[in-house]
Length: 202
Image (cartoon, rainbow, N blue to C red; front, side, top):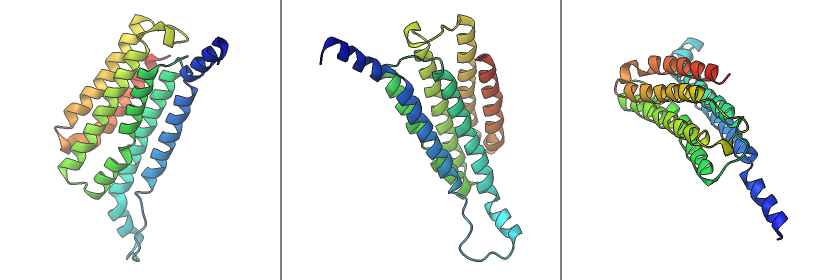
């Protein structure tokens, strides 16, 4: 392999397109798996109302978890829209991000099956805390070097986004210690923080 081909090969591996495609595929699978938790009972139910009352919590868990997956997919999409090249560190951070995100269907299933069990809600909060934390670390690292980006980000904008991401991670951590208010507060916190995050990118 001559010098030109070697340089071309290195450039190809640093292109973020493959990591973006992988992330899109993983989140598509995550969102698909979430709906599989909602199953019509094999035994004939007495009425539609009984099915709704029985599976209502699974539907709520699906809506909340699908929204969580959507927000974290969108935030990843917006972060990498400005990334022109990656390195091994970014690659591994993204893999860890996907590994944690892949647990969303599992914790959603826990809440759907054990809605009144505090540990299921705490585990859900822990997964969201880890996901928010690795997103924060990935953003800080990606924006720490101008060579990774198409357009440089002002210190003010970067600081604003980091504070918003930190707020999300901290909020989920606090909510994990209060499982009774978690199910309502978590989704509110998620959308409030994500809306500020998206707004700060434009």
